[in-house]
Amino acid sequence: MTTPELDRDVPVEQPSAPPRTPKSTTGSRSTLPAWRGLIYRLHFYAGIVVAPFILIAALSGGLYAIAPTIENIAYRDYLHVDSTGPDVPVDQQVRAAEQLRPDLELVAVQPATESGATTRVLFADPTLGESERHAVFVDPTTANPVGESTVYGSSGALPFRAWVGQLHRHLHLGEPGRLYSEFAASWMWVIALAGLFLWVVRYRRRRVANAAEARLLTPGRGGKGHSRTVNWHGAVGVWILLPVLFLSATGLTWSTYAGANVDEMRAALNWKTPVVDSSLSTATSAPPAHGDHGGATATGTGPSETTVAQLDSVLRVARANGIDGPVEVSIPAIADTAFVVKEQRLSGVFAIDSVAVDGATGQITDELRFAEWPLAAKLSSWGIQLHMGMMFGVANQLLLLAVIVALVSVVIRGYVMWWRRRPTRGSTLAVGRVPTRGSIRKIPPLGIAAIVVVGLGVGYFVPLLGLGLLSFLFVDLTVSAYKWAASA
Image 1 (tube, rainbow, N blue to C red):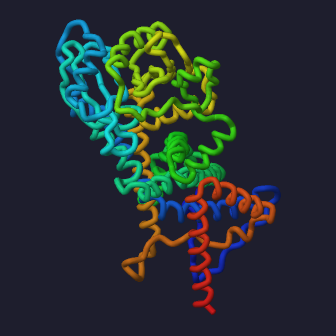
Image 2 (cartoon, rainbow, N blue to C red; image 1 turned 45 degrees about the vertical axis):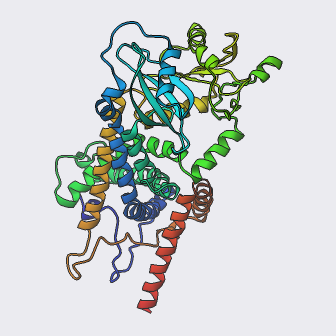
């Protein structure tokens, strides 16, 4: 038999009634109601304020999850050709692209690796933004250009996917707009873990009262109105907990302030992603050490005809040394610089190997195997691919889409719960009441000290989380002071 108290999440503020004192128990259970009240208050405030940002990030992320499929359809004429027969040498394909865009500096080429695919010849364009390059798509069997477009990032996203990616990243507002996504990622894991704690406590209470009604992983068949909304909100939240924590953590690595702290930590622990050394002068004096040492920066007008003519031999050397599948070949524009042949980060590619090849001699001057990467760098690479829907192709994209749809439903149900808890009498503008304050006064001093220490540490590492906590505390104290003054 259930009691009315068990059907309610937590007490809400009742100005006319004094707060109830919890029954005295022994052990850690005596403070559980206090912890529950405090965490529920945090979950409530964060859910109301942060949920709109999470909703925007989820909707734009869901669109990005299916963007590769849309891209393959929308840009089919650029990505695929109907020509059949043997491919012409890669250097001829590159020269055909250079004739089309003699005004731009050649930087790299991505040779076609399967029948019907096009070769991408990449150029630097000073009029484009960060991480953007100009691509000319060439039919590998005829060496005829079939189109040109701007591509973005290491995945070579075409304009539609790049536009959706920038929408998800900063709402097309530039660097200031990145604060929205960082704010959402900073708080999403906190809201999720707080919600899990509340749901488990609720499950345990219901299990004690009536085991038949206790549900942890399913919403249950009974219940109407507010009770049914709570059941679905909690159960679906548990289903997507791990993916949400993953998306929050990987999203923070791309953020402005928390991301900078992550980079500093990775550098201090030597967890940064290593790169292959393309400097020939270093290679002739001593073997290069793997680490975060980049190659020379091209400052000339572009690769010479002799350099371009070496492309096919460089590719043969790379293939002979295990660099298989789709690759990108960085073409040196200055002397004492080697070609860099690197496997592309595409769907189904779990290891990214790269080598530096001296175009004049055909010798390997440096190589970097994915197996040599630090574990943290490997996890970061895999995390990026999973977050972007590139790890397992369409299956990865569908999984992300399902998680995002579930997340949107949890957010919407949270607002429905808030609305249904509003007073039914009085102002028509009334909304759900804030959970009762004062729980922190019932927590032991050691627990309060732990809250302060953890809050300061996490707030420093994730600044927008710390600022949000201070804002919630300021608003809460201001409202409390106002009510105290009004009652006095």
